[in-house]
Image (cartoon, rainbow over all chains, first blue to last red; front, side, top):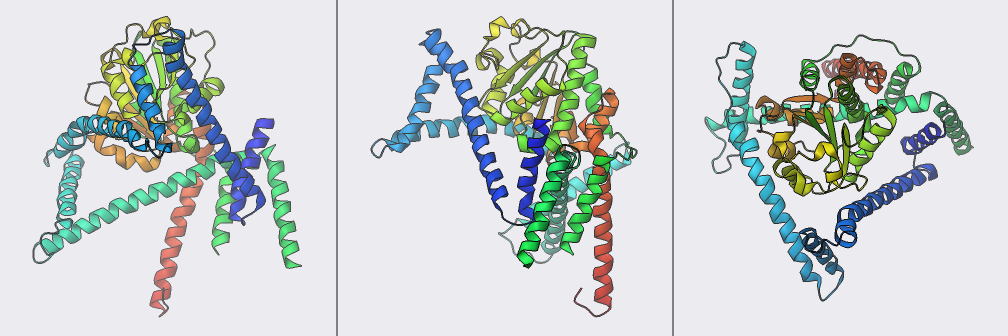
Length: 218
Length: 268
């Protein structure tokens, strides 16, 4: 009961920005940032405790590779020292290098080699063939648009134009789906504010808006 | 005018929240595919679910995540599968996993460590994913509560991805790292994500690097219907349907208005 009421009050505090900037919105905003930070720090400390403190200090596994990670992690904090800040470059370099290496290793197969295989245009299922043809045409024409070494004249002009249309369809779809996602977020929260106990908080919010409007008119 | 558009929208999505309309739903083929892959797990199989979506996207990803968790935990009872839950992206995911386990899933009668295990947040994201695939025991040292994995019987023989029968993940950002690190091993790899991320997922799905996808409330509702366990997906689907009809209506009316005004000599 209390959980549901607090949830609906916080939702209304956030949505009150749609009416205008106000103290409830600012409290909600501060609450969100503060709570998110507190939770992140708490879980982060839990992870440090379970994965570093227990093995190294409690179990005294001093020669564990975890110790290297701890040392690199601590080196990050030298960034706050004017004379030692350069030390922090080493863990950052290692982190970027390892991250890039891991990503690239997987990317070659998943994002390059396998994606080059468009598939046959003549399949049993006619729609798969059409789909593959669309894929082929849109991929080539979109790439043609980015050929900046040639002026988009002659045969290249309509090809590049088709590439623009392909990309516009893609961007439009993405934008539309993002809007759908955002509508989905609102829809998932609505039950909290139209059913008791959230409904009572909504009624209070509506009264506050009416009062505020009356005061402004006066 | 703008305010009227939004007020009508809020009223439309509030109506089914107060009194469900029971509009018909169709189950998409991709939802059935995901359901089949999970349902086909056999006794003793280990399923790993990576809960990586952020708290703020619960409305879109949460309902399907709950539906899949319920299905997996139902399979523990019905078929004796084992479930590993883990988070690799950010703290949020582990909070979502904890919430689902605490509020939505019935774990009564199941043995923690033998039937299911929650590994919590293992920082590292893509490097962690690679570690899980290649050398599970070197990456995973303890579960979410600090228990060493050698004290969790179901994890003793898990050495790499080859010991896991099915992998699923939920994300509200890029799906790229998962097929990069976990795809191509011949294991089912399922994604639960935002509807906006689905087009991003499809190139991997087409190449079977991702073997199934569910996105947003409509798929969540379909999944709930397939498992026979109704939840948030079915409850919010009426509102979703009404909002889409309203959106399509607005686009049509807006365009008719625009072209009528242009023909009449206006600016459009």
